[in-house]
Length: 273
Image (cartoon, helix red, strand yellow):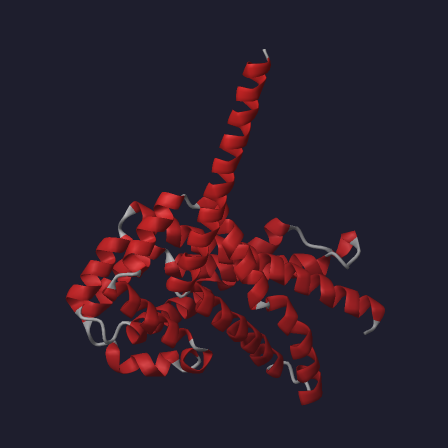
């Protein structure tokens, strides 16, 4: 009996160590994935871009420079890149297999994968992205290239993902702010979604224009045959899972950030700060 117990304990320890080793390996691979895919750089650029967009919207509300500066300081911590990176890391750990991560890393570590990622990171820089429409104009006459970019977007879910993130961010912000109102003054989530549908087409047009411009500028130095190889990679099961996980992770993180921001605005309004 004693020997059976010893074997049982040994097996428990053995499998526990295997599980721990697998978890450590997955964490390492996710870290490598986030850096080599350019996601770390993109998240940092997005954090700055989001704050800039909020500030731009504030400038259209006839606010003084002092008021805008104060609100900018309030907004910035809620769209912290460090928090978003942590959210994305955990989402990848929970939703991607080690095998999927390794297959994506094979592409990202290839010469073409590194080149494409480098161009994407450079174009994501807020200083470039803020002028992306004008930079892309001379490139829009190439119909062959436009068709390839449409294919890339369909495989990555770029436009649809960006539209979803924008809508969910708005909804979460408004819901958080409504939590500070009396119940009889709040509108339902269904009514809010219906109201947003009125602007959905214009939102989609803006995002489509931005995404197309971003791709045109990012891939302008990538040859057509290289884009074909990129498209072939994007059409693999592992790449589809990775891009879906990326959009879902960023979407969830933005929802949480806007919810926290909305709650803070209400608390400040109530307290008079």
